[in-house]
Length: 154
Image 1 (tube, rainbow, N blue to C red):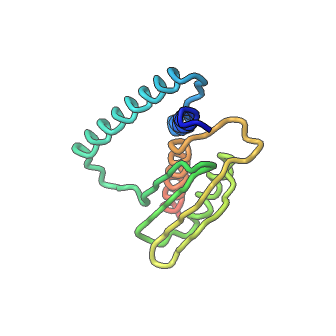
Image 2: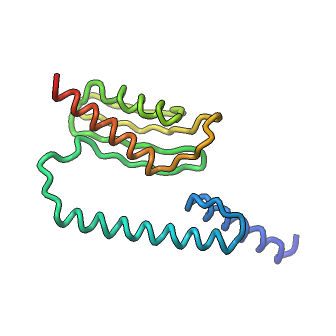
């Protein structure tokens, strides 16, 4: 393989990585780059919105848990951390995974003094619609909110 072919292969691979990272369905190079540019603009807007929200937020009831979701090659890494032990929270989160069609491939849970969940979730093979990290995070946050409201009523 010549160095020119090697460079083309590397460029093609990097373009496919960019396509995957930006959830682009485009097939040609120019469209993938346009999609990536639009994705970056959306992220910048989200950052600006979050910065404005942090400056003006005076919410008396902070979220009972912190949630982060990272996109992996095939699935997601989901982390949930709460300051207190939360009976029933794990069940609520796992139900949210099930509703999304996510299979839990690996998980670590601690419920002693605090609640900690680190899970790797992958989409069911029969799942036609591709879901992204934002959708997963929103579903987990909604599950936590639903759990929180139901546990306050008890």
